Length: 107
Image 1 (cartoon, rainbow, N blue to C red):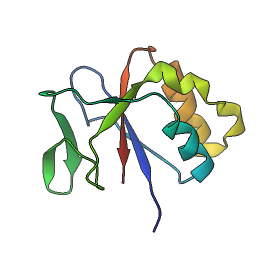
Image 2: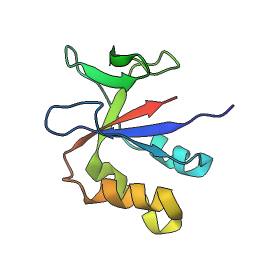
Image 3: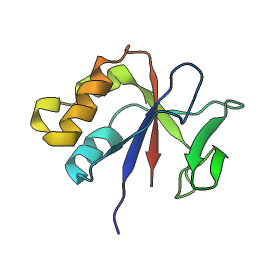
Image 4: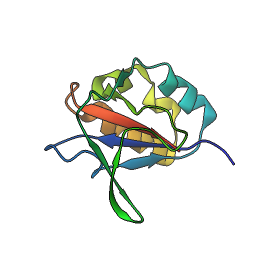
């Protein structure tokens, strides 16, 4: 088993509704882990649409507090070094307004 990452840009006050899974790539994950992150402020709720329906979450599947970074931080990662899906996901994140919060859902 490995670690996976799903990114959840927050728009229109619908946290957890929009999400993109990044294909497993340890080098890319290391770059994402280097981005400055912030803890989800309390009492802000993060809703995750899981198999049982909407779940309110404060931690990831490993029990760590959820974190986010602003979409502008993803511009520090060279998307041209990525291929296929991961390239497209990075280009999407980099094209969002820089202040858009993006929750990092490690699972």
